[in-house]
Length: 507
RNA sequence: CGGGCUGUAGCGCAGUGGCUAGCGCGCUUGGUUCGGGACCAAGAGAUCGGUGGUUCAAAUCCACUCAGCCCGACCA
Image (tube, rainbow, N blue to C red; front, side, top):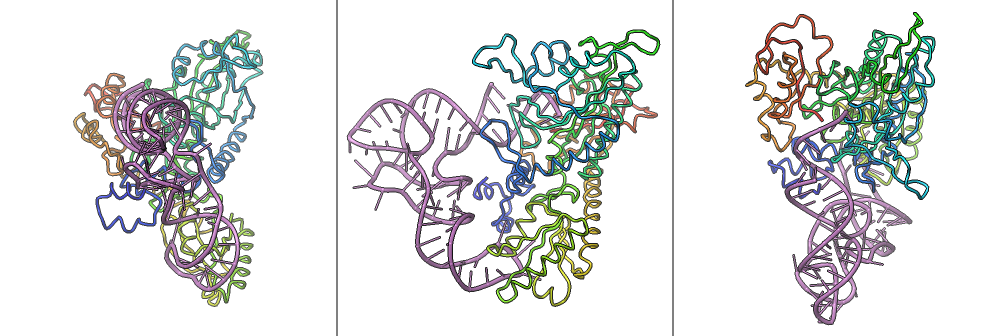
Protein backbone atom coordinates (compact mmCIF):
# COMPACT_ATOMS: atom_id res chain seq x y z
CA UNK A 1 0.00 0.00 0.00
CA UNK A 2 1.34 3.39 -0.92
CA UNK A 3 1.31 6.31 1.43
CA UNK A 4 -1.32 7.99 -0.71
CA UNK A 5 -3.57 4.96 -0.56
CA UNK A 6 -2.92 4.76 3.13
CA UNK A 7 -3.93 8.38 3.58
CA UNK A 8 -6.98 7.98 1.42
CA UNK A 9 -8.35 5.41 3.82
CA UNK A 10 -7.61 7.41 6.94
CA UNK A 11 -10.42 9.36 8.48
CA UNK A 12 -8.47 11.58 10.84
CA UNK A 13 -6.04 14.03 9.19
CA UNK A 14 -4.09 14.36 12.42
CA UNK A 15 -3.37 10.66 12.46
CA UNK A 16 -1.93 10.97 8.98
CA UNK A 17 0.96 13.08 10.06
CA UNK A 18 2.16 10.83 12.81
CA UNK A 19 2.35 7.94 10.36
CA UNK A 20 4.17 9.86 7.65
CA UNK A 21 7.41 7.99 8.17
CA UNK A 22 5.72 4.67 8.83
CA UNK A 23 5.77 1.64 6.66
CA UNK A 24 3.09 -0.14 8.63
CA UNK A 25 -0.59 0.43 7.93
CA UNK A 26 -2.32 0.92 11.31
CA UNK A 27 -4.53 -1.93 12.49
CA UNK A 28 -7.55 0.30 12.78
CA UNK A 29 -7.25 1.30 9.13
CA UNK A 30 -6.91 -2.10 7.53
CA UNK A 31 -6.14 -5.12 9.65
CA UNK A 32 -5.16 -7.48 6.88
CA UNK A 33 -2.88 -4.90 5.26
CA UNK A 34 -1.32 -4.28 8.66
CA UNK A 35 -0.49 -7.97 8.91
CA UNK A 36 1.05 -8.04 5.43
CA UNK A 37 3.09 -4.91 6.18
CA UNK A 38 4.47 -6.50 9.34
CA UNK A 39 5.48 -9.73 7.65
CA UNK A 40 7.14 -7.94 4.74
CA UNK A 41 8.80 -5.12 6.67
CA UNK A 42 10.06 -7.33 9.48
CA UNK A 43 11.53 -9.47 6.70
CA UNK A 44 9.86 -12.65 7.89
CA UNK A 45 8.68 -13.76 4.47
CA UNK A 46 8.22 -12.57 0.92
CA UNK A 47 6.05 -13.39 -2.03
CA UNK A 48 7.66 -15.82 -4.43
CA UNK A 49 7.48 -16.23 -8.20
CA UNK A 50 5.26 -19.25 -7.55
CA UNK A 51 1.65 -18.28 -7.14
CA UNK A 52 0.36 -19.02 -3.68
CA UNK A 53 3.76 -19.98 -2.32
CA UNK A 54 5.90 -17.80 -0.13
CA UNK A 55 9.56 -17.62 0.69
CA UNK A 56 10.26 -17.82 4.39
CA UNK A 57 13.17 -15.52 5.08
CA UNK A 58 15.77 -16.15 7.78
CA UNK A 59 14.09 -14.01 10.45
CA UNK A 60 10.83 -15.85 9.87
CA UNK A 61 12.38 -19.26 9.54
CA UNK A 62 14.21 -18.75 12.83
CA UNK A 63 10.86 -18.35 14.59
CA UNK A 64 9.69 -21.60 13.06
CA UNK A 65 12.92 -23.31 14.11
CA UNK A 66 12.39 -22.28 17.71
CA UNK A 67 8.80 -23.54 17.65
CA UNK A 68 10.02 -26.73 16.03
CA UNK A 69 12.68 -27.25 18.68
CA UNK A 70 10.15 -26.95 21.51
CA UNK A 71 7.64 -29.23 19.82
CA UNK A 72 10.22 -31.79 18.83
CA UNK A 73 11.62 -32.02 22.33
CA UNK A 74 8.18 -32.72 23.76
CA UNK A 75 7.38 -35.28 21.06
CA UNK A 76 10.48 -37.19 22.01
CA UNK A 77 9.74 -36.86 25.71
CA UNK A 78 6.39 -38.49 25.05
CA UNK A 79 8.01 -41.41 23.26
CA UNK A 80 7.77 -40.43 19.61
CA UNK A 81 10.37 -40.89 16.88
CA UNK A 82 10.92 -38.91 13.71
CA UNK A 83 10.79 -40.50 10.27
CA UNK A 84 10.32 -39.35 6.71
CA UNK A 85 7.87 -40.53 4.06
CA UNK A 86 7.70 -39.65 0.34
CA UNK A 87 6.40 -36.39 -1.05
CA UNK A 88 4.56 -38.16 -3.86
CA UNK A 89 1.58 -40.33 -3.11
CA UNK A 90 -0.13 -42.63 -5.63
CA UNK A 91 -3.61 -41.29 -6.31
CA UNK A 92 -5.13 -44.69 -5.62
CA UNK A 93 -3.91 -44.52 -2.00
CA UNK A 94 -6.01 -41.48 -1.30
CA UNK A 95 -9.05 -43.14 -2.77
CA UNK A 96 -8.92 -45.98 -0.24
CA UNK A 97 -10.49 -43.91 2.49
CA UNK A 98 -13.69 -42.42 1.06
CA UNK A 99 -14.15 -39.40 3.34
CA UNK A 100 -10.48 -38.63 3.21
CA UNK A 101 -10.23 -38.35 -0.58
CA UNK A 102 -13.47 -36.40 -0.68
CA UNK A 103 -12.07 -33.93 1.82
CA UNK A 104 -8.89 -33.26 -0.11
CA UNK A 105 -9.84 -33.66 -3.75
CA UNK A 106 -10.18 -29.96 -4.65
CA UNK A 107 -6.85 -29.10 -3.06
CA UNK A 108 -4.66 -31.70 -4.71
CA UNK A 109 -1.74 -30.95 -6.98
CA UNK A 110 -1.17 -33.94 -9.25
CA UNK A 111 1.97 -35.07 -11.03
CA UNK A 112 1.13 -36.72 -14.35
CA UNK A 113 4.47 -36.68 -16.15
CA UNK A 114 7.98 -37.66 -15.16
CA UNK A 115 11.08 -38.77 -16.96
CA UNK A 116 9.66 -37.36 -20.17
CA UNK A 117 6.72 -39.75 -20.16
CA UNK A 118 3.19 -39.78 -18.94
CA UNK A 119 2.93 -41.82 -15.76
CA UNK A 120 0.90 -45.02 -15.60
CA UNK A 121 -0.67 -43.80 -12.39
CA UNK A 122 -0.57 -40.14 -11.41
CA UNK A 123 0.92 -39.10 -8.09
CA UNK A 124 -0.42 -36.36 -5.95
CA UNK A 125 1.83 -34.15 -3.89
CA UNK A 126 1.00 -34.99 -0.29
CA UNK A 127 -1.71 -32.86 1.25
CA UNK A 128 -1.06 -34.96 4.39
CA UNK A 129 0.53 -38.38 4.74
CA UNK A 130 -1.99 -40.70 6.38
CA UNK A 131 -2.37 -42.86 3.30
CA UNK A 132 1.24 -43.50 2.46
CA UNK A 133 2.10 -43.99 6.09
CA UNK A 134 -0.69 -46.51 6.58
CA UNK A 135 0.42 -48.36 3.47
CA UNK A 136 3.75 -48.86 5.28
CA UNK A 137 2.24 -49.57 8.70
CA UNK A 138 0.53 -52.53 7.09
CA UNK A 139 3.98 -54.07 6.61
CA UNK A 140 5.32 -53.14 10.00
CA UNK A 141 2.50 -54.17 12.28
CA UNK A 142 1.65 -57.81 12.97
CA UNK A 143 1.43 -58.23 16.71
CA UNK A 144 0.33 -56.25 19.74
CA UNK A 145 4.04 -56.31 20.57
CA UNK A 146 4.64 -53.96 17.61
CA UNK A 147 2.38 -51.39 19.23
CA UNK A 148 2.16 -48.59 19.92
CA UNK A 149 3.88 -47.20 16.86
CA UNK A 150 4.64 -43.56 17.54
CA UNK A 151 6.07 -41.75 14.51
CA UNK A 152 6.29 -38.10 13.61
CA UNK A 153 7.38 -36.44 10.41
CA UNK A 154 8.58 -32.90 9.75
CA UNK A 155 7.72 -32.10 6.16
CA UNK A 156 6.23 -29.81 3.59
CA UNK A 157 2.75 -30.44 2.24
CA UNK A 158 0.71 -28.92 -0.54
CA UNK A 159 -2.94 -27.98 -0.60
CA UNK A 160 -3.85 -25.87 -3.60
CA UNK A 161 -5.42 -22.66 -2.36
CA UNK A 162 -7.41 -20.12 -4.29
CA UNK A 163 -6.76 -17.43 -1.81
CA UNK A 164 -3.56 -17.22 0.17
CA UNK A 165 -2.22 -15.26 3.08
CA UNK A 166 1.41 -15.19 4.20
CA UNK A 167 2.02 -17.90 6.84
CA UNK A 168 -1.69 -18.38 7.52
CA UNK A 169 -2.59 -20.03 4.26
CA UNK A 170 -0.21 -20.83 1.42
CA UNK A 171 -0.38 -23.66 -1.06
CA UNK A 172 2.81 -25.19 0.21
CA UNK A 173 3.51 -25.06 3.91
CA UNK A 174 5.78 -26.64 6.49
CA UNK A 175 4.38 -28.71 9.27
CA UNK A 176 4.76 -31.67 11.50
CA UNK A 177 2.46 -34.66 11.33
CA UNK A 178 2.34 -37.34 13.98
CA UNK A 179 0.90 -40.73 13.05
CA UNK A 180 0.40 -43.32 15.72
CA UNK A 181 -1.05 -46.81 15.92
CA UNK A 182 -2.43 -48.38 19.11
CA UNK A 183 -3.89 -51.57 20.51
CA UNK A 184 -7.01 -50.06 21.94
CA UNK A 185 -9.45 -47.27 21.37
CA UNK A 186 -8.77 -45.95 24.86
CA UNK A 187 -5.04 -45.77 24.28
CA UNK A 188 -5.49 -43.99 20.95
CA UNK A 189 -7.94 -41.50 22.39
CA UNK A 190 -5.53 -40.78 25.21
CA UNK A 191 -2.77 -40.20 22.68
CA UNK A 192 -4.86 -37.70 20.72
CA UNK A 193 -5.59 -35.84 23.91
CA UNK A 194 -1.99 -36.01 25.11
CA UNK A 195 -0.69 -34.45 21.90
CA UNK A 196 -3.21 -31.63 21.76
CA UNK A 197 -2.10 -30.85 25.31
CA UNK A 198 1.50 -30.76 24.09
CA UNK A 199 0.39 -28.22 21.51
CA UNK A 200 -1.40 -26.18 24.09
CA UNK A 201 1.67 -26.16 26.30
CA UNK A 202 4.05 -25.01 23.56
CA UNK A 203 1.65 -22.44 22.14
CA UNK A 204 0.78 -20.92 25.49
CA UNK A 205 4.21 -21.13 27.06
CA UNK A 206 6.40 -20.19 24.12
CA UNK A 207 4.19 -18.37 21.65
CA UNK A 208 2.36 -16.69 24.55
CA UNK A 209 -0.88 -17.30 22.69
CA UNK A 210 -3.74 -18.41 24.97
CA UNK A 211 -5.89 -21.13 23.43
CA UNK A 212 -9.14 -22.99 23.98
CA UNK A 213 -8.89 -26.74 23.61
CA UNK A 214 -11.84 -28.81 22.60
CA UNK A 215 -13.55 -31.11 20.20
CA UNK A 216 -14.58 -30.05 16.70
CA UNK A 217 -18.17 -30.44 15.57
CA UNK A 218 -18.95 -33.09 12.94
CA UNK A 219 -19.00 -30.41 10.25
CA UNK A 220 -15.58 -29.07 11.15
CA UNK A 221 -13.64 -32.25 11.86
CA UNK A 222 -10.87 -33.74 9.72
CA UNK A 223 -11.90 -35.83 6.73
CA UNK A 224 -11.45 -39.42 7.83
CA UNK A 225 -11.36 -38.83 11.58
CA UNK A 226 -13.75 -40.13 14.21
CA UNK A 227 -13.22 -36.96 16.13
CA UNK A 228 -10.89 -33.98 16.00
CA UNK A 229 -9.48 -31.99 18.89
CA UNK A 230 -8.10 -28.52 18.27
CA UNK A 231 -6.64 -25.52 19.98
CA UNK A 232 -8.19 -22.20 19.02
CA UNK A 233 -6.71 -18.75 19.50
CA UNK A 234 -8.19 -15.28 19.13
CA UNK A 235 -6.41 -12.78 16.90
CA UNK A 236 -6.52 -9.01 17.44
CA UNK A 237 -9.36 -8.63 14.95
CA UNK A 238 -11.32 -11.01 17.21
CA UNK A 239 -11.33 -13.77 14.65
CA UNK A 240 -10.42 -17.30 15.64
CA UNK A 241 -7.36 -19.09 14.37
CA UNK A 242 -7.00 -22.85 14.62
CA UNK A 243 -3.48 -23.36 15.93
CA UNK A 244 -3.21 -27.14 16.01
CA UNK A 245 -5.29 -30.28 15.55
CA UNK A 246 -5.19 -33.81 16.87
CA UNK A 247 -7.39 -36.52 15.44
CA UNK A 248 -8.64 -39.79 16.79
CA UNK A 249 -8.95 -41.81 13.61
CA UNK A 250 -10.51 -44.93 15.10
CA UNK A 251 -10.01 -47.89 12.81
CA UNK A 252 -10.84 -45.98 9.62
CA UNK A 253 -7.38 -45.99 8.11
CA UNK A 254 -6.51 -49.43 9.50
CA UNK A 255 -9.54 -50.80 7.70
CA UNK A 256 -8.84 -48.88 4.50
CA UNK A 257 -5.27 -50.18 4.42
CA UNK A 258 -6.00 -53.50 6.08
CA UNK A 259 -3.68 -53.05 9.03
CA UNK A 260 -4.46 -55.84 11.49
CA UNK A 261 -2.57 -57.14 14.46
CA UNK A 262 -2.89 -60.20 16.62
CA UNK A 263 -4.06 -59.00 20.02
CA UNK A 264 -3.24 -60.40 23.43
CA UNK A 265 -6.03 -62.94 23.06
CA UNK A 266 -4.58 -64.11 19.78
CA UNK A 267 -7.37 -62.59 17.69
CA UNK A 268 -6.91 -60.39 14.62
CA UNK A 269 -7.99 -56.81 15.10
CA UNK A 270 -7.64 -53.53 13.23
CA UNK A 271 -5.37 -51.05 14.99
CA UNK A 272 -6.56 -47.77 16.45
CA UNK A 273 -4.94 -44.62 15.13
CA UNK A 274 -4.28 -40.95 15.69
CA UNK A 275 -2.76 -38.17 13.67
CA UNK A 276 -1.89 -34.65 14.79
CA UNK A 277 -0.33 -31.59 13.22
CA UNK A 278 0.84 -28.04 13.62
CA UNK A 279 2.19 -25.86 10.87
CA UNK A 280 4.03 -22.66 9.99
CA UNK A 281 0.63 -21.08 10.49
CA UNK A 282 1.73 -20.81 14.12
CA UNK A 283 4.20 -18.15 13.02
CA UNK A 284 1.24 -16.17 11.69
CA UNK A 285 -0.58 -16.67 14.98
CA UNK A 286 2.31 -15.21 16.96
CA UNK A 287 2.61 -12.22 14.66
CA UNK A 288 -1.11 -11.45 14.72
CA UNK A 289 -1.54 -11.93 18.44
CA UNK A 290 1.17 -9.64 19.77
CA UNK A 291 2.27 -7.12 17.15
CA UNK A 292 1.31 -3.45 17.11
CA UNK A 293 1.31 -0.48 14.74
CA UNK A 294 5.07 -0.08 15.11
CA UNK A 295 5.75 -3.57 13.84
CA UNK A 296 6.43 -7.06 15.04
CA UNK A 297 6.26 -7.97 18.70
CA UNK A 298 7.78 -11.33 19.57
CA UNK A 299 7.86 -13.37 22.75
CA UNK A 300 11.47 -13.45 23.98
CA UNK A 301 11.58 -17.23 23.80
CA UNK A 302 11.00 -17.10 20.03
CA UNK A 303 13.05 -14.02 19.19
CA UNK A 304 16.25 -14.55 17.22
CA UNK A 305 17.65 -11.45 18.92
CA UNK A 306 16.31 -10.95 22.41
CA UNK A 307 18.28 -7.79 23.09
CA UNK A 308 19.81 -5.30 20.69
CA UNK A 309 22.37 -2.81 21.90
CA UNK A 310 22.22 0.52 20.09
CA UNK A 311 25.26 2.63 20.90
CA UNK A 312 25.00 6.40 20.57
CA UNK A 313 28.04 7.23 18.48
CA UNK A 314 29.58 10.68 18.49
CA UNK A 315 32.87 11.42 16.82
CA UNK A 316 34.64 12.32 20.05
CA UNK A 317 33.57 9.19 21.93
CA UNK A 318 32.81 6.60 19.26
CA UNK A 319 35.71 4.27 19.96
CA UNK A 320 35.16 4.25 23.70
CA UNK A 321 31.40 3.71 23.41
CA UNK A 322 31.77 0.81 21.00
CA UNK A 323 34.36 -0.83 23.23
CA UNK A 324 32.05 -0.40 26.19
CA UNK A 325 29.10 -1.79 24.22
CA UNK A 326 31.13 -4.83 23.22
CA UNK A 327 31.76 -5.49 26.88
CA UNK A 328 28.03 -5.24 27.58
CA UNK A 329 27.33 -7.63 24.71
CA UNK A 330 29.72 -10.18 26.19
CA UNK A 331 28.03 -9.83 29.58
CA UNK A 332 24.60 -10.39 28.06
CA UNK A 333 25.76 -13.45 26.17
CA UNK A 334 27.38 -14.82 29.31
CA UNK A 335 24.01 -14.43 31.03
CA UNK A 336 22.48 -16.66 28.35
CA UNK A 337 20.76 -13.86 26.44
CA UNK A 338 20.66 -13.84 22.63
CA UNK A 339 22.02 -10.37 22.05
CA UNK A 340 23.43 -8.34 19.21
CA UNK A 341 25.24 -5.04 18.91
CA UNK A 342 24.29 -2.63 16.13
CA UNK A 343 27.37 -0.47 15.80
CA UNK A 344 26.78 0.48 12.18
CA UNK A 345 27.49 4.20 12.08
CA UNK A 346 25.83 4.87 8.75
CA UNK A 347 22.42 4.96 10.42
CA UNK A 348 21.25 7.32 13.13
CA UNK A 349 20.14 5.98 16.50
CA UNK A 350 16.56 7.04 15.82
CA UNK A 351 16.48 5.04 12.64
CA UNK A 352 17.80 2.00 14.45
CA UNK A 353 15.25 2.33 17.24
CA UNK A 354 12.42 2.25 14.74
CA UNK A 355 14.00 -0.52 12.71
CA UNK A 356 14.60 -2.91 15.60
CA UNK A 357 11.14 -2.21 16.93
CA UNK A 358 9.70 -3.11 13.56
CA UNK A 359 11.65 -6.35 13.66
CA UNK A 360 10.28 -7.24 17.05
CA UNK A 361 13.38 -7.35 19.23
CA UNK A 362 11.96 -7.54 22.79
CA UNK A 363 14.52 -5.33 24.56
CA UNK A 364 16.65 -2.48 23.30
CA UNK A 365 19.63 -1.28 25.27
CA UNK A 366 20.77 2.26 24.50
CA UNK A 367 24.21 3.28 25.59
CA UNK A 368 25.94 6.59 24.91
CA UNK A 369 28.63 8.78 26.42
CA UNK A 370 26.28 10.17 29.07
CA UNK A 371 25.28 6.68 30.19
CA UNK A 372 28.91 5.60 30.28
CA UNK A 373 29.77 8.53 32.50
CA UNK A 374 26.82 7.75 34.77
CA UNK A 375 27.60 4.03 34.85
CA UNK A 376 24.26 2.90 33.55
CA UNK A 377 22.43 1.94 30.34
CA UNK A 378 18.94 2.68 29.06
CA UNK A 379 16.51 -0.22 28.60
CA UNK A 380 13.46 -0.01 26.34
CA UNK A 381 10.75 -2.69 26.40
CA UNK A 382 9.16 -3.54 23.08
CA UNK A 383 5.88 -4.75 24.56
CA UNK A 384 5.09 -1.69 26.70
CA UNK A 385 7.37 0.97 25.23
CA UNK A 386 8.61 1.64 28.74
CA UNK A 387 12.15 3.07 29.13
CA UNK A 388 14.28 2.96 32.26
CA UNK A 389 17.92 3.03 33.35
CA UNK A 390 19.80 0.01 34.65
CA UNK A 391 23.22 0.05 36.34
CA UNK A 392 25.75 -1.21 33.80
CA UNK A 393 26.91 -3.93 36.19
CA UNK A 394 23.42 -5.43 36.38
CA UNK A 395 22.74 -5.59 32.67
CA UNK A 396 22.85 -9.40 32.47
CA UNK A 397 20.57 -10.21 35.38
CA UNK A 398 18.24 -7.35 34.56
CA UNK A 399 17.93 -8.41 30.93
CA UNK A 400 16.97 -11.93 31.97
CA UNK A 401 14.43 -10.53 34.39
CA UNK A 402 12.89 -8.15 31.84
CA UNK A 403 12.71 -10.84 29.16
CA UNK A 404 10.82 -13.08 31.56
CA UNK A 405 8.47 -10.22 32.42
CA UNK A 406 7.79 -9.61 28.73
CA UNK A 407 7.10 -13.29 28.11
CA UNK A 408 4.57 -13.25 30.95
CA UNK A 409 3.01 -9.94 29.99
CA UNK A 410 2.42 -10.95 26.39
CA UNK A 411 0.49 -14.03 27.43
CA UNK A 412 -1.54 -12.19 30.01
CA UNK A 413 -2.31 -9.31 27.70
CA UNK A 414 -3.48 -11.69 24.98
CA UNK A 415 -5.55 -13.67 27.46
CA UNK A 416 -7.22 -10.55 28.76
CA UNK A 417 -8.03 -9.46 25.22
CA UNK A 418 -9.59 -12.82 24.48
CA UNK A 419 -11.56 -12.92 27.71
CA UNK A 420 -12.77 -9.35 27.22
CA UNK A 421 -14.05 -10.35 23.80
CA UNK A 422 -15.74 -13.55 24.84
CA UNK A 423 -19.42 -13.27 25.68
CA UNK A 424 -22.09 -15.67 26.80
CA UNK A 425 -24.92 -15.72 24.27
CA UNK A 426 -28.25 -17.35 24.98
CA UNK A 427 -30.51 -16.73 21.99
CA UNK A 428 -30.40 -16.43 18.24
CA UNK A 429 -31.13 -12.71 18.04
CA UNK A 430 -28.24 -11.93 20.34
CA UNK A 431 -26.04 -14.26 18.33
CA UNK A 432 -26.83 -12.43 15.10
CA UNK A 433 -26.34 -9.06 16.76
CA UNK A 434 -23.03 -10.26 18.20
CA UNK A 435 -21.60 -11.21 14.85
CA UNK A 436 -23.38 -8.54 12.89
CA UNK A 437 -25.40 -9.41 9.84
CA UNK A 438 -23.46 -10.80 6.92
CA UNK A 439 -21.68 -8.08 4.99
CA UNK A 440 -22.15 -5.44 7.63
CA UNK A 441 -18.48 -5.05 8.44
CA UNK A 442 -17.02 -5.43 5.01
CA UNK A 443 -14.12 -3.19 6.00
CA UNK A 444 -12.90 -5.96 8.27
CA UNK A 445 -11.49 -3.47 10.71
CA UNK A 446 -10.38 -4.31 14.21
CA UNK A 447 -13.50 -2.56 15.45
CA UNK A 448 -15.76 -5.04 13.76
CA UNK A 449 -18.25 -6.77 15.95
CA UNK A 450 -17.68 -10.25 17.14
CA UNK A 451 -15.31 -12.28 19.19
CA UNK A 452 -15.96 -15.60 20.85
CA UNK A 453 -19.58 -16.43 21.56
CA UNK A 454 -19.86 -18.87 24.42
CA UNK A 455 -23.18 -20.62 23.92
CA UNK A 456 -25.17 -23.79 24.46
CA UNK A 457 -25.81 -25.95 21.44
CA UNK A 458 -28.20 -28.80 20.74
CA UNK A 459 -25.66 -30.68 18.62
CA UNK A 460 -27.65 -30.46 15.40
CA UNK A 461 -25.67 -29.54 12.29
CA UNK A 462 -28.72 -27.70 10.94
CA UNK A 463 -28.31 -24.97 13.57
CA UNK A 464 -24.62 -24.74 12.82
CA UNK A 465 -25.18 -24.41 9.07
CA UNK A 466 -27.85 -21.79 9.44
CA UNK A 467 -25.70 -19.62 11.68
CA UNK A 468 -22.77 -19.94 9.31
CA UNK A 469 -24.90 -18.90 6.35
CA UNK A 470 -26.26 -15.89 8.18
CA UNK A 471 -23.24 -14.64 10.12
CA UNK A 472 -20.19 -16.54 8.79
CA UNK A 473 -19.53 -17.70 12.35
CA UNK A 474 -18.75 -21.36 12.93
CA UNK A 475 -18.29 -23.61 15.92
CA UNK A 476 -14.61 -23.41 16.73
CA UNK A 477 -14.72 -26.10 19.35
CA UNK A 478 -16.63 -27.61 22.23
CA UNK A 479 -14.27 -26.59 25.05
CA UNK A 480 -13.06 -29.73 26.71
CA UNK A 481 -13.31 -28.49 30.27
CA UNK A 482 -16.80 -27.03 30.01
CA UNK A 483 -18.93 -29.99 28.99
CA UNK A 484 -20.00 -31.07 32.47
CA UNK A 485 -23.50 -30.45 33.77
CA UNK A 486 -24.97 -28.93 30.64
CA UNK A 487 -28.55 -27.89 31.06
CA UNK A 488 -30.40 -25.23 29.23
CA UNK A 489 -31.50 -24.69 25.70
CA UNK A 490 -29.65 -24.31 22.43
CA UNK A 491 -28.88 -20.66 21.73
CA UNK A 492 -29.75 -21.25 18.10
CA UNK A 493 -32.97 -23.26 18.10
CA UNK A 494 -34.10 -23.49 21.71
CA UNK A 495 -34.06 -27.30 21.85
CA UNK A 496 -32.43 -28.94 24.87
CA UNK A 497 -28.69 -28.32 24.76
CA UNK A 498 -26.14 -31.11 24.73
CA UNK A 499 -22.91 -29.14 24.43
CA UNK A 500 -21.29 -25.86 25.30
CA UNK A 501 -19.71 -24.44 22.14
CA UNK A 502 -17.55 -21.49 21.20
CA UNK A 503 -18.67 -19.77 18.03
CA UNK A 504 -16.54 -17.32 16.05
CA UNK A 505 -15.57 -16.17 12.64
CA UNK A 506 -12.38 -17.90 11.71
CA UNK A 507 -9.34 -17.68 9.50
C1' C B 1 -14.41 -19.73 -9.21
C1' G B 2 -16.75 -14.64 -8.98
C1' G B 3 -15.77 -9.03 -7.87
C1' G B 4 -12.08 -5.12 -7.66
C1' C B 5 -7.22 -3.07 -8.31
C1' U B 6 -2.34 -3.09 -10.43
C1' G B 7 1.88 -4.25 -13.87
C1' U B 8 7.35 1.78 -15.95
C1' A B 9 14.88 1.14 -11.84
C1' G B 10 15.36 -3.17 -5.84
C1' C B 11 10.65 -0.67 -3.56
C1' G B 12 6.73 3.23 -4.04
C1' C B 13 5.02 6.23 -7.94
C1' A B 14 4.73 10.23 -12.17
C1' G B 15 4.57 10.31 -17.21
C1' U B 16 -2.63 10.22 -22.43
C1' G B 17 1.25 10.12 -29.28
C1' G B 18 7.03 13.50 -30.31
C1' C B 19 13.27 13.56 -30.21
C1' U B 20 18.09 11.57 -24.34
C1' A B 21 11.51 7.99 -19.86
C1' G B 22 11.40 11.22 -14.73
C1' C B 23 10.73 11.77 -9.13
C1' G B 24 11.06 9.88 -3.96
C1' C B 25 13.03 5.98 -1.00
C1' G B 26 16.75 2.42 -1.12
C1' C B 27 21.83 1.15 -3.10
C1' U B 28 27.49 2.60 -4.11
C1' U B 29 31.63 6.16 -2.95
C1' G B 30 33.46 10.28 -0.07
C1' G B 31 32.57 13.77 3.81
C1' U B 32 29.85 16.07 7.93
C1' U B 33 26.47 13.99 11.66
C1' C B 34 24.37 10.78 15.57
C1' G B 35 19.84 10.34 22.84
C1' G B 36 13.23 8.60 18.24
C1' G B 37 13.33 7.12 11.02
C1' A B 38 20.12 13.24 9.83
C1' C B 39 22.54 16.07 5.78
C1' C B 40 25.80 17.44 1.53
C1' A B 41 28.24 15.94 -2.92
C1' A B 42 29.23 12.54 -6.77
C1' G B 43 27.53 7.86 -8.95
C1' A B 44 25.23 3.04 -10.47
C1' G B 45 20.65 1.21 -11.77
C1' A B 46 14.82 0.57 -16.98
C1' U B 47 15.14 -3.24 -23.69
C1' C B 48 8.08 0.73 -19.68
C1' G B 49 4.61 -7.54 -17.97
C1' G B 50 4.25 -10.20 -23.02
C1' U B 51 2.58 -10.73 -28.21
C1' G B 52 0.42 -8.62 -32.33
C1' G B 53 -1.66 -4.28 -34.61
C1' U B 54 -2.55 1.28 -35.89
C1' U B 55 1.07 5.37 -36.96
C1' C B 56 6.33 9.05 -40.01
C1' A B 57 6.58 8.23 -34.57
C1' A B 58 3.83 4.01 -29.04
C1' A B 59 5.28 3.51 -21.97
C1' U B 60 1.11 6.39 -24.03
C1' C B 61 -4.05 4.28 -28.85
C1' C B 62 -6.43 -0.82 -30.17
C1' A B 63 -6.81 -6.28 -29.66
C1' C B 64 -5.33 -10.48 -27.37
C1' U B 65 -2.61 -12.57 -23.50
C1' C B 66 0.22 -13.41 -18.96
C1' A B 67 1.12 -12.34 -13.95
C1' G B 68 0.34 -10.49 -9.06
C1' C B 69 -2.32 -8.54 -4.96
C1' C B 70 -6.87 -7.37 -2.22
C1' C B 71 -12.15 -8.67 -1.17
C1' G B 72 -15.90 -12.89 -1.20
C1' A B 73 -17.25 -18.73 -1.24
C1' C B 74 -13.73 -23.46 0.35
C1' C B 75 -9.67 -24.97 3.49
C1' A B 76 -4.28 -25.88 8.69
